[in-house]
Image (tube, rainbow, N blue to C red; front, top):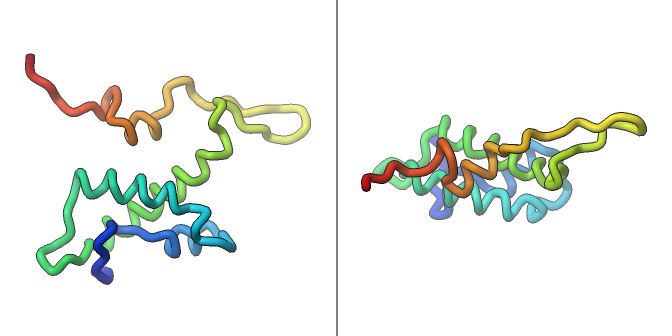
Length: 108
């Protein structure tokens, strides 16, 4: 188990350590988004602690969301002559916004 946190299973310090960021606040928006998302799906145990797999998974997801800032227009440069294109349908954004396969079920 990890230590209790009111905000969610991950923190800016954990993401900054994983990504070797000099300023943990660089990842604040990604961490806030992931903690909000995870709190909508899961909750800590009765003692207010998050399971280790929830903490690690949330940290990985926040690190991935933070890195997505490098390709907001749909492509990421890969050197002087080539570019890697990002899929038109972005599963990270769909997950954050509850779209497509991540949409909640509705009746009627």
